[in-house]
Length: 39
Image 1 (cartoon, rainbow, N blue to C red):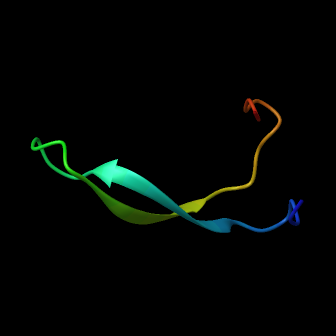
Image 2 (spheres, rainbow, N blue to C red):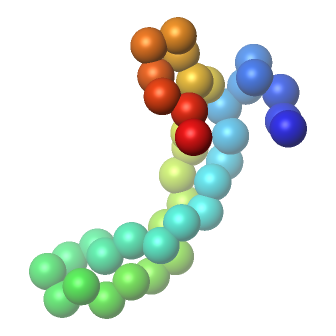
């Protein structure tokens, strides 16, 4: 498991327009807070 004190760079798949075609999408995920659900 990575450190809980820093944001993580993530890579996912996303439909960026109404066509529904998925493409790679980079995003930054913040640290889980006390009122968040972690799965």
